[in-house]
Image (cartoon, rainbow, N blue to C red; front, side, top):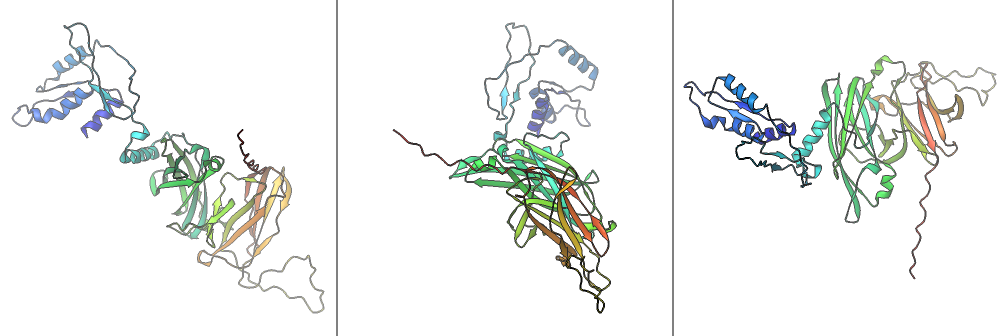
Length: 432
């Protein structure tokens, strides 16, 4: 503990002046009790005064000693940042002078020389700091899905550009590790959820990774309310750190006419990994939808959307039958109302540019609750994008509860770009 205190004082380029009076009830001086104070003062370039309760003479001596001093600077020829103590020695060519100087200093410590406990403390300190480091770019997105009236699953995705992760080649694989720590704070003060994980990456070639993003997906079960999220990531080759903070509002859907989840946009589905924790609504039929938080797609990709509607109203009246002798309904006539005790929710997707409709999908009509344990109708849409020209669009999701007469039309900007060029074929080298 004393060594840590000395190192902390030296980090702030400070010195300790210690005062120690008489000890105990008998007023006798006990040198054993003053060893820590003497060590702390000496190691930091200060001075300790003992066996006196008269501080006036002590202050006069301190003032005299500090009235004349020299500031010396130098550059060490030892480039190692190993955190070790390095001794200093100052000499003058006048034997009649007495020198007081710091015995030494602790060298800086880089990531390579941090032990396991120091590395863990570094993450904790970064999570708690008000001024976050952004050496590694980090982006995050979230979406909420209702579990019951008072609990929601908050899906969180963290994205790191692959070009920011250094890989080391081992056993014909390119490997890297990333440490992740995060916290969910309610009402600006109270931490309610916490995350700590280490991700190991192993790929055949880093070329593809450098051109893409590395994404980490997780989730928390929360009650409706306002939350502050902060995440810190560190790549463990050089120790660079990045962080991201955002505020999230989970609404109380009991107060809304159309109870609807977030809309998740994606361009990728992967086999579910079977993670522990609360059931993830983005996993269905053993496939997990990977959120695209940047909303940037290539025209040769598919746009997948997933969203849910809760507590859809049920029809009260049966569909009316045509009267005797009445002509049959026209082919293009509007469909009849839903029968008794069934739901009827319609949805479609539109793409807009400059206020004009460029594309609209065929409407989908849901007549049953597909996730009864959550009283949810789950919509999963699949839209090929090859028919749309590259450019910036507004994607509008149309959702109408036909029985209740409620509706919602959330919108999202998306960018469709040209497909990535195919890699050029390798050219065989010839020798002469």
